[in-house]
Image 1: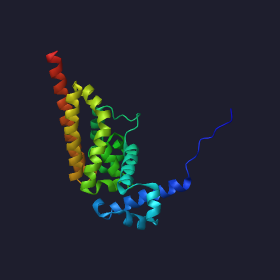
Image 2: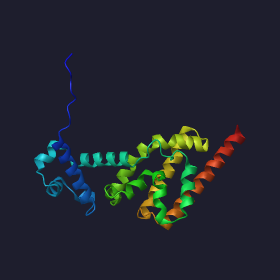
Image 3: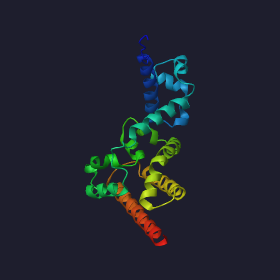
Image 4: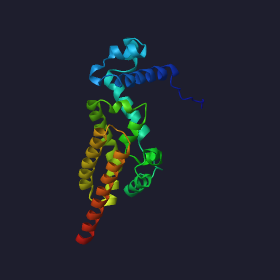
Length: 213
């Protein structure tokens, strides 16, 4: 049989798409997403509208691709010890609220917080409306990973764990947003209190399960 070769992506296409996405992220640092249109984006990227539409059908498609890349970038790797809530609490307490020791717990932080720490993707969280859109996307992705964790940690059925995760996700995201996504001593105190509350609740739920069995 003749040897077949997989066609390599055109490097020029990759460069143009990267320029478009980088331009949108830079614009988000200056203005809300609703004030950005294709014309403004093309001017920033140094391309024509015709070139833009060769790569994307609309501005929203650019945004969705950026968000998908951001989530892949920020999600914990399988080797990260994020599968144990107690591990995160222990790491936070070891840091003792010292902002200079933030790096020691970076891999354990919620995905939204790691996005906020990255200069490239942090712009997605600056606009409240856009942050809400990102939150919805992130919730669906994280749900598949963290609902089973809550089932194990708290001894819950899947439906109960899903409800608890919805509450925790929305609450933690809102706290981070209110605190401006800054990991300072006040943020550490808040996160530690939240985790103590969560772990205490998990212990109580497990105890109820044992008593009721």
